[in-house]
Length: 275
Image (cartoon, rainbow, N blue to C red; front, top):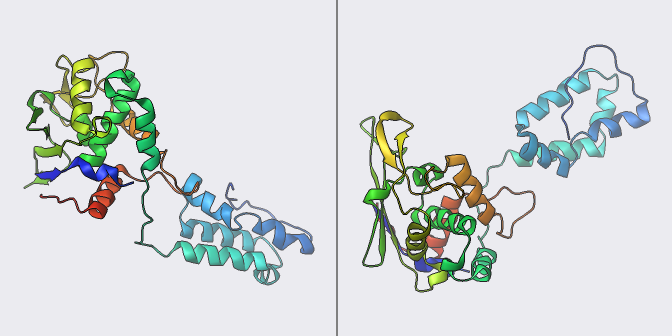
């Protein structure tokens, strides 16, 4: 079990596949046209959009070079050097993470206004984001929150996740989570949960557990248009990403993982965790 206090929220190219047959490109254009494949920024786009590994790109490069009669001349081209340098740099795994600035998210929450006035979509997005960040919960954990055993006591939200990914002795375990209240109602995960229960999750939502059909889980997070149907893991992820996408970040960088956001903010603010 771990406890997290809410106050830290104030911390403000397609790759070419080799083809059979001879290939001829005029010498003066050969190197430039070939290396347009992945110069600089396009190389990054390959990693992000096509999800190609460095080794895959190198294999494509080697195969293409075998199709030309001027491989050595191409290898001396400055663009070729740039490509290799970019690939080499991509092999370096950095453990230095930039500071996460969630102030755009906090501004958005304030612009939305009081929690009781939010639309169901806004309320669902906000609750899912708060649970993931302040509770360090995976989207699959949020999907498996056992609503009947969730409660608010002394301004602390107590959650029970049924058969989370963690296992002990090969068996699934219940995961307990406690989330503290925030002094600002607009930024309070506990108050957001309370309002969500009043407006959306008023009744139980029993559904079979995906890992064992004999288990019944009464889900917390529901469809916007039908509160009798639980949200899927993918839907919860989309709601969370819609909020996290507001974070100021390099346009080529992926959206930060919400659990990483929570851990970073907690560490920066000195919040304690107890597992």
